[in-house]
Image 1: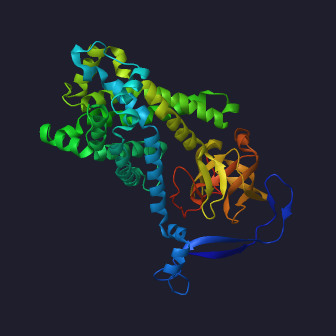
Image 2: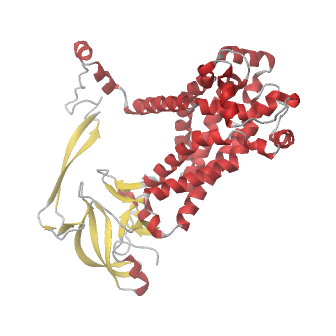
Image 3: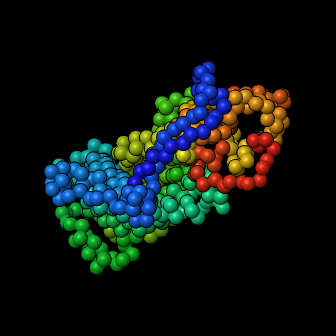
Length: 458
């Protein structure tokens, strides 16, 4: 794969940069870098392959080996290492949660107390094996990260294609469904490691993962590796749906001036993640107790009344505090990143043009297909004003051009002559076919010419 410089020269009349009055009357030129194959077999434009570093060079600069790792593999490896580090760092909290969730079942009917608190579980975790006991059962959890991530990434891409419309567009609901289905698929494939993790963490004695696995297979059969799978799969979709829905509803209910503040997104994400966890946590407790050796529960319908009868309603929420300490910061940060990362960029040079939160309407059209109305667009230059007949009447508009590569990406409404169209004045249209964004970039090109530059939302 090589990078080639592309030199573009185009005449754009009376350009001016956004926020200024300086006009450019000379032709606009740009140089951009693009990836290409060069010729058959890749490499340089003359058909030769790029030479690999010599052994002597690699010995002198061993870190150069990292540059030979494919980008996809590097990102996947970095994600796996980060995930393993995060799991290892929070393993003590996870073991405390498991001990609290399963205590009533482990002590049986002869136990004096049905539940234990955070401090009691903390002391119990290190009682038998000392400091090492806080990481008991962490190995299968770390091993699980690689296949879980690989299956989830592959499944997500497959489900996105299946749920996309004919023109390649994928709605927000479609993305949520694809994410939930990918999570369910990866959970199903790697579930045996999750069961092994629980058995190692809560059962007495010091045994290896292989010893526990062989003992389960010999005494309980293959089905024991999938005990509690039902509540695991059931809990994924509601958690994602509740989390995102509450997040969106809370943000929309706040005054407009707070919508674009990052701290608003963070607090809203924390509250929505907390409520989603609160609603779905009982399913996690049911799952953990069904995974136990000799569990009396065969189905979700057995487990819910059984846990309440044995430990009261609070038994469904044993271990909620360490779980919240472990997961809520991560969930809220991810949701905040998701919200603030909705960026629309130029399809050619990737220059950032607008944030998703600046969208006023997605009901507009251009001669190339769909178009979005934005309140604010950046990194553009504005052409000269001209009157243009749109689908909703006559408007004075100015074409807008990406400041990075000079591509025409839409237009700005300077004036509207119909009273009910005045809300468009000072707003911007970005044509979806010409920009990349969080809701996909595979938009169709319509060869049929519409009136003027087209328009929408009459």
